[in-house]
Length: 192
Image (cartoon, rainbow, N blue to C red; front, side, top):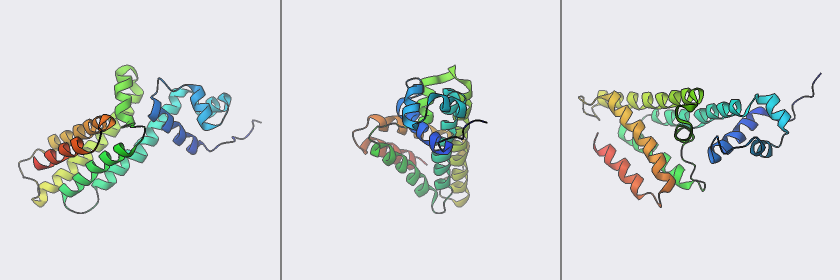
């Protein structure tokens, strides 16, 4: 009979997510994970199988904590453009307040791993698809309510909003303040 686990796996995935988010997949060593989680390498591999398996769990945790929070904000009531502004500015403020300027873990994963890691890309695509679909649904709502012109292509604007989020997350990694990202948000919303 093996020894019982001496750590909480949910907490371990959360802490591993923070390491991967801060350092990236390639720069994160098994020793970094062991140090952060406070467990031995054997326990790490027994619990998660591999560094990559833990990374995938961390991406899923990121999706659950970030993407679903964004979608929930978009689904709140109120004027559509105000909700869009609230979500976009929330991301700007979140990124600018982060002392490590980590940006978006999903975007960072695409930039680092590209097509060399198909399973990670599948997870990221699902996150991006979910976000884009939420944007499209909000734009459709705005069209129905007359807040957005009826001839606007909701699918195209959903893609534009997703692209804006990706760009904002990158801009905020190097921004000295909120001026540039705020201009981007204001220009986008004025165009709808």
